[in-house]
Image (cartoon, rainbow, N blue to C red; front, side, top):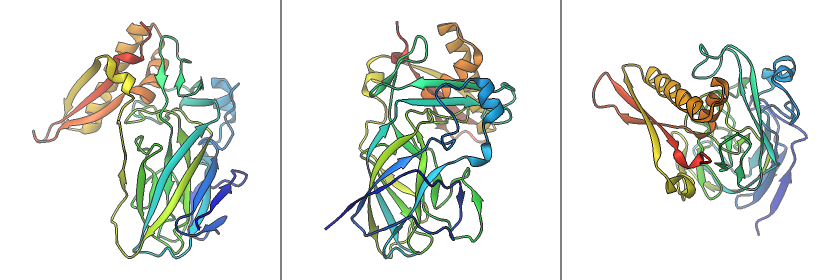
Length: 312
């Protein structure tokens, strides 16, 4: 008979290290209700200002994950199957700009912080905009095979900081087990995010999640694989046209920058807001997609911004 376990966020992990002892060992088929801190590890508070963020935020504590969870019988060569069943936010989230980080770091040299109030499956915190929430965990991963301690920023074959926004409730994630027991950790939850997470944050939110785990024995997997039931965007967003910003460049990142700069200008004009606020909105609502790679050496990138988010 499968069991439901609970794991709180009283102990948090901000490094990959396969010598970290598991906090919980479960059987295949069991489910775990995880309490997950926001990416800052409860540093950021709903009443913080940009000055508080600048003066008090410690980036060495990012990300703040819950786990590890060991699955009995998991061995290298197996697949850990993670059925993502539910997410529940705690009513608020934050998005920041940090000097030196993000796609347009050269354009935004100052700290900025925006606090979101989350109500059910929507937020109208941003003046003139209503956004639908699609919660997911930015980090779900197993312990790495390599010995040592590693920052959590870079993803890899083990999963980790993938920020795949379609790993919402109902999705199933397959991870290649790297070490005995697998040692799954999760966190960095986002209430919403655009494909690209361009300013460096989505809507960073403390959250609870329920996950059910299975094993596929001795069926090697080279890198994460997932299945999601869709829809891939909020159905409300398809009730109005989409605004497309199209750019081409030899370097894909240059095309992405041009797209986001145009989207920022569009939002500034539309909402009479600051560039920092427009950039913040891009990070949680603008989807960057590769439109073509065939015209070597040029890549075309398109940014999709739903018209439906604007209030009138």
